[in-house]
Image (cartoon, rainbow, N blue to C red; front, side, top):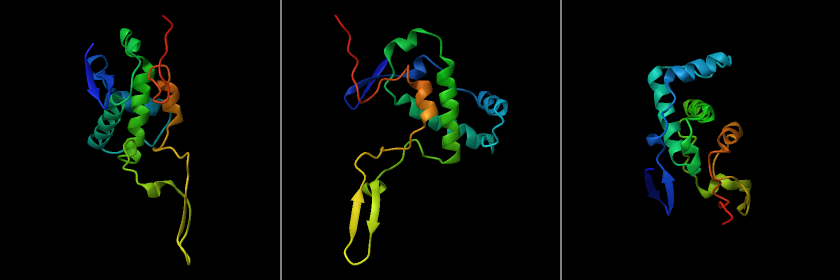
Length: 147
């Protein structure tokens, strides 16, 4: 396996194992589901697909998923994330500030702000999370094996 290290943990370079979904794969996927959201110029859709693939490359993959053929779930997750990037470029990699966590704000008289304590740091895509669940390690948990 080929690994590269980022921010203290080891990641698998998925380009060594899997291939990106193609534009025709995505077109067929959305046509089969009757979705009209996947429209526009091919160049723009291709750019959205590349940004979605770049996002997938940052995930902490479970090592043993690379012993099988590319799961259809990975391809479908790539296509669904591509749609999100097409609708709102940069949605997968937002630049967040503390103001993104304000739950209430009163700017009369004295300035008052309340911040949400449990707000997610980025937009979540539940359908994609369900597809990727078996293949990606949670950043909140560690893998424990009995010896």
